[in-house]
Amino acid sequence: RCKKEARGGYCVSSTADNRAAQDRLLLGSALRESLAKGMLNLHYQPQVDIKTGRLYGVEALSRWKHPTLGNIYPSRFIAVAEDTGQIETIGTWSLEEATRQINEWERQGLHVPTVSVNLSAAHFRNRGLPALIERILKERKLTPERLCVEITESVMMDENEDTMAGLAAIRNLGVGLSMDDFGTGYSSLSRLTRLPLTEIKIDRSFIMNLEHDPNAQAVTTAVIGIGNRLNMTVVTEGVETEAQLKLLRGLHCDVVQGYLFARPMAPDALLQWATGPEMERVSVMARDVLNE
Ligand code: C2E
Ligand code: MG
Ligand code: MG
Ligand code: MG
Image (cartoon, rainbow, N blue to C red; front, side):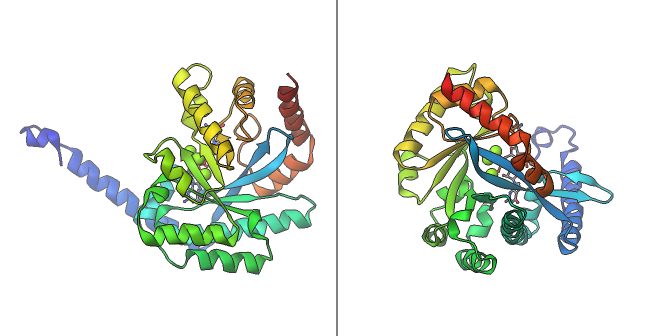
């Protein structure tokens, strides 16, 4: 386990490993308590259709503010949830909460066409997932296209029959199915054509380098082209500059999500954003790019 030790040297990593494992357990029980008390929240980040300048949908992202530990980001607690058997609880809660919120916005006068929820690979091994989604949609009286499920390439690459049957069953409900962080895993393009996807999200790492790295531009161009040909919506995430937006527009990208337009926001802030001058500013920005 420790290379230094194997070479006969001094090694501290096993105690460090123990400490990391201990931290994870502590964080795991704090998470269990917070989940039970309903102390997690969802924030929502707008996705903008850059051809029309209108709101395409929002992505729901989990937020955890612990009373003494402070803000803990999903990059940390989602892994803890996976390790401590709580990822299905989080997935089910996000589905219920996001669909409750889309109805709440509707009552407040804001129509959000679609809400996207992130689900982990582990949740897909549960055969009950499609039925759970069906039940939630029914309870919320929502048509299926109001919900989209985001999964990473690891789910798509899982040759497991239950996973594949689950993907097909979810797609058959009419719910959107999005491949998140595309380009960071090992999926092949031929595989892409055989999966019941409605959407591809190009990973932020490509967008980040779009202006200066010809390779990132080549990959982005190819993925947008293939997505369009396969009748999938292509979403680019992590768009932070107008220069990136202009490039993406030229490449016929459909939907943009990133700090350039807005950060993930609490539900009330999203309502203000989408119904006020911010949405107008974003629409104008998208249209200006169109007219150039
Ligand atoms: P993701 O699904 O790829 O979500 C996009 C992440 O990029 C979010 O980070 C978002 O805040 C961030 N982001 C959006 N636009 C920009 C930008 O312009 N610049 C930069 N630098 N970042 C941007 P966040 O909220 O910290 O989430 C991280 C990851 O944690 C998510 O990546 C997702 O994989 C996972 N995650 C979040 N919530 C959930 C959840 O409820 N369930 C599961 N299973 N995973 C979740
Ligand atoms: Mg996502
Ligand atoms: Mg992503
Ligand atoms: Mg990402």
